[in-house]
Length: 433
Image (cartoon, rainbow, N blue to C red; front, side, top):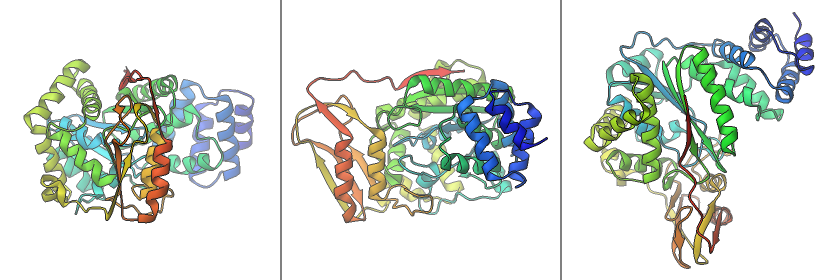
């Protein structure tokens, strides 16, 4: 078998065999296939697509290219949640303790933020003392004992995905639906959970800009998970506007705690309840509506917040900060953005607002950039809200005074105020099961 022939088959719109896909993945990870050959095949896939069988095979081979976590020693049902990325998306911090408080086992590997999208690991590391790097044995033990453990992604988990994603990023082939689906699901399959809920974002702050694109990706990922014997659901949720009001690592932890205490932003609470409800539905065989009711009861009783504190303490995090959010480090500079006209907020470009927070120091433009945990944005107005000239739109927080002017300019460019009130977009577009 030759990689030349495999490239030619896909170039000519032929369906690759399981053996050809296996040969490519194994050979590339071992260094036996050159980058230029892999680049050519990725472009052929980008242009000509893949069948469902090809996509499933590619995903399984990528998942099996490195370590496969064995969670079989954990009593109970193991669950996982994945978001395709967004601005102000702190749902893991809320959803995981909700479902763990009901006895489900959340064994989760999460990533760091890059560009306008935030990362769960960065948010957790904003908590003093919290450890995101544990041995496989400690990871499993924490899940057994506390029902939750969230750590950074292992370098040995789906290495084929890591290698191919870097190549896709540099060859303009990121936007291929089968390649996106296999990238996400290879890591989820390798992570070992029995039940997986995917939060697929759509809108200006998401990779999938339209609900139709999000639905196509969701169906592919659910099919892949089912083919691998996992119970999977995909929730298509809005990311045209940032989720919640706080953007930035410490600020988002504080907002998550507010929701866990029964307060906080209604949109954030609603999305979290839907995600948790669908995890419960997959795990317990109930309807999503019944799952949502169970999740809501855990919030209202305080059980979810108690489980959150147990989770934070189990990984060395400061409970004093969780109980007293004012103890989080404060940014040296804050700047108020004032409305320059009256009307209704017709649009908030979530990607641009996320990029504004990156300028302030809350995110990374490059992988090796450092993060200012205190930096970020608190929104006072959101899409569809009425504003009067002179109203407070948002407050910027940073330790870099020079960043404020450009961050404010980008934030204002992201907002459109008009005389007509826009009908709000649905928070949840559809659930694919």
